[in-house]
Image (cartoon, rainbow, N blue to C red; front, side, top):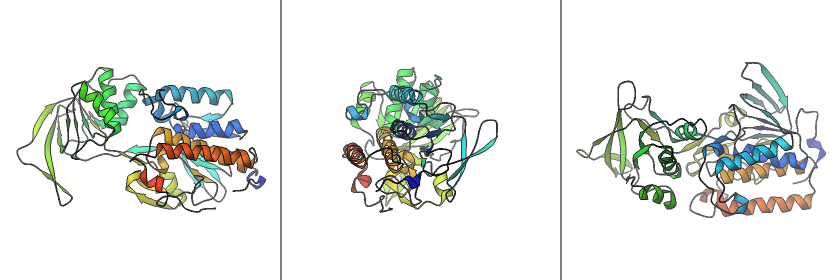
Length: 374
């Protein structure tokens, strides 16, 4: 990849970043530190994304912020951005990207419409929680685990006192523990599969606290008139790939909150609107934008990073954001080739370390999502 001043055109910014979560913040910090003129846009009233919902300590190495809590990482990134004067727009929704002109259209909370242009655009819009459907699933008191986490850790609101968690992946296990720390009683974790989905270290914490984890079980109904009063749970078998409820195994648990932790899917509406090449990869949460080793999509100058490029950990999202920041800085002439190669190799080494376990195997092989876009 060659550095070229052709990337410097008559644009408003040298890099537009859509989404101020872990990937967007890291990309903005890296690029701005190299000298790139960056604007960061987010639809929420505060930046940070999932980092500020995470009170647990991160795993990994020093480079992955091991031993530091998510919200502390977010605070550090925001402090760094403030010191290097990155422009930040909050309460702002991007509703259109026009690839020919590299024009981004957005509206602020007062409904005014604006347009800005850049030869480099990063889509870092994150992920959406996947719902599951069952009788009574629209009752108040049924919510995603991520929503419950946001209520607790961002807005300091306890979402429920007696909780059933549906799903034993890392999110379900971590949020269960955080609910207990906040004062809720977690009555049980319900898992459809015959084994726990998340890391054993997370499962062990809530098991030591006396929370049962019921594998080969699922919810079949949320009961209540105006809000959740109880959950009906049933044992299940898998019969030729189909779920079979075991008749007579149903039981009811009194609760006021049913949390759904059934996974995430990339928040990829802007990618679809742009017409990016997309590919369905179940291990990464669904349809993801195909990209090259520089996180550049099928349209030159349009980059993707974080959960929109495939559901992984916040640590991975931050590394992908750093990668995009380094790529854009090099193309604009702010980094020398020898320095860029060092940064690029260091980031890819850290990404490889993060993906060295059973999670992220599709990415590690590289064949299923990467392509040779030049």
